[in-house]
Amino acid sequence: MQEPKRKPVKDDYPTEAFEVETFDFMMWRFHVRDIIDLMAKGKVDFKIIEADVSKGVHGFKKELGWDGHSVHSVIKVEAERAQELTLEDLDVPGIMVELSEEKNTLLIDGNHRAVRSHMEGRSTFPVRLIPFKEMKRLKRRGLICS
Image (cartoon, rainbow, N blue to C red; front, side, top):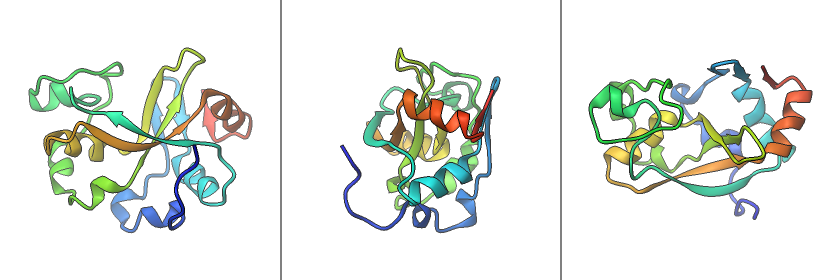
């Protein structure tokens, strides 16, 4: 499924708040800005999904004491930054990658928006999911390092 016709991905990030260059997680480094630029040019395969945030988001349980859960609980999200986001910001899709053929996923862009979506009582958060096969291709191009 392809994303519906709309403005380019790059325009989804109108403020400096979304100017993330890289995202580091354990042994991985994701060059988020470059991946976003390639998405805007139609050079990255992805599909739009609604990620479940009904039970919490990465690092959220420890930070705010909510009854959340996370596969990757080492990701920290600043509660104050999440609360500064507007409701309009929550409609900007995040970016999630499949880390393995077993469909283990990691949100590399949009963690604060996902947390705020949870805080607002939303059960889902829109993300662009990059499949494992595409992630391997991005890795060969040097946009994902391990």
